[in-house]
Amino acid sequence: MFRNLSTVGLPLSGRPSELIELALSFGFDAMDIDIVDFQQQAEAFGVEHARRLMVSARLKCGVFHLPISLIGDDASFQAELAELPARLEFARATEAMRAVVTVAPASDEHAFKDFFELYRQRLDTLGALLAKYGISLGLAIVPEAEARAGKAHQFIHTYEGLAGLVHVSHAAVGAVIDSWALHVTGEPLSVIGSFPAGRIVEVRLSDAPRDVPAAELGSGHRLLPGETGVVPSAHVLVEANKAGFDGPVTPWADRSTLTGRGREKIVRLAGDRLEGVWKEAGLPIVPRWFAPSTRENAPRFGEDPALLAALEGKNGAV
Figure (cartoon, rainbow, N blue to C red):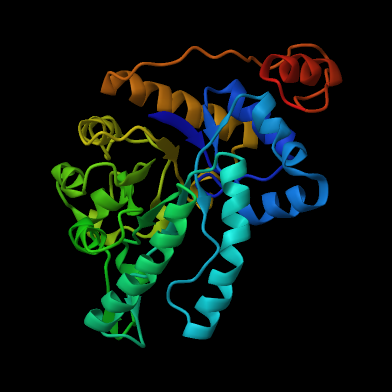
């Protein structure tokens, strides 16, 4: 397993060089990428240029959100599907081998059985395509009751339900295990082991407030891991490790719970919390190789030509 920083999981903005320096400074081993943005950069300037900072920083690619809707009409699905081969070629070129999508928790148009079959068919199509590039697809769930409120038909919003879909899907399709979702649904951690071997794509960690019952939690309650200790993040990692998971572990929190904390403080805190969870779970921690500069007015990572030249020399990057 390795620690992954996501600018979706922790809503962050900034220049790529700034975000990469934060990831390096506070113990992260990987970052998610925006595959559409990466494709645009690669088409304009070349793959080596587009991935140069990640390579120089020795950061792995965590996951990327697959830009396709599984619930649209057939024409929209086919149009988005037609754009994927080029995107997946670029993903493979930058060693981004894990994609994720979110399963709709409810629908006004489709009853459960019909919706399940629609997902199964489209995931079969997607899985076959992704497998050609060696890329796996993780399915994430939306567990909060608020996401199903007012909808005519409920759909998959638990891991028991997701396991049923994964078991009948293409072998390239697996699950995103989310400690927040496990807490909200109240399912036992043993459900992590119910997924086929090698089919866990990502693990996400969060915490929850002490004074709100799990069944009443909304997305706005989602806290950084280790905030209250209500969600047993270390136990989640232990179970994931037993299941053979060796991929990205990503901290997630709602933007509203981070108000008043600057970007550096958020990433520092998330990194420290993950390190604590790592130790509690008995997982090995790779020592940091990079520390932020203490020089006054020093250029940031990616803006320092000497630092970039030294790193690129070590890694063979162009």
